[in-house]
Amino acid sequence: MANIWIIGAGTIAQEYAKVLTALGYSFQMIGRGEEKARQVEETLGYKVIRGGLDSYIESTSEVPEAAIVATNLGSLAPNTIALLKFGVKRILCEKPGFLYPEECEKVAALAKDNNAEVYLAYNRRFFSSVLKAQEIIAEDGGVTSFSFEFTEWGHVIAKYNKPQGELQNWLYANSSHVIDLAFFLGGVPIKMDCYTAGELSWHKPAAFSGAGVTKSGALFSYQANWAAPGRWGVEVLTSQHRLYLRPMEILQIQNMGAVAINPVEIDDHLDKEFKPGFYLETKSFMEMETASLCSIEEQYRHVTEIYYNIIK
Image (cartoon, rainbow, N blue to C red; front, side, top):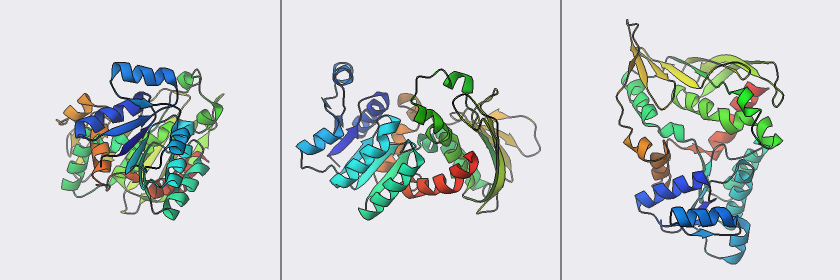
């Protein structure tokens, strides 16, 4: 593919530009503001088209072979919809792909109507630590149970200068990074019992707890308390090992019959050279190896069958 669009010129868009350059693909970066465009051109040498996506679409008839949407949260769904209507057939959109969950249904429906592929960029699926965990899980015969925590630092987030809509949808916008990874490793849930309690000045509820079973029979549980100390983490149990992803860039392991928890050696040079997970995720998208990517259809199922239940 030689005709690739990157929508956005911010930090994340620049990370995609670095990866595409390393992979040998040419691209056009489409931004909005003059200041950011000039900064990117002066510091990184990438040419940026000004005026935003809608303006550029009006000025061209050439449909890109693929596009990467890396804008702010509120613009993710509108830009994806504009690209689909313009005729783009392959899109990688930054997670979660929307600001309001109802936007996910609109994007999924439009992608289906236009016979297009839209994927959400959950880069943690491509962490070196996660890839190694998948190897161990496969060797051990699969996941028997797992747990995860998606505690957010509510006292810090309350000070962010964020739009109210983004704060109200923080579980989708941020916590879904952990939830997506947990079920990516552990399997699709078929039954969940979910509980919530409390509230913050900027979000209700404040605490979450639940448990269930996956399609393969693995049991799972989760908890998060945004009004208390905590951190993100995923723990996966097999017949032979307990795997710790806390923090998720690092893999630790506990063997059957042992108390010690030891680090697992991983080849993480790509996660150090580029933003973690970005290189392999972008490479998979560009080379149409989509098995580990989150499709818009999968994301819509997650919204309706997982996230809605966790937050209700």
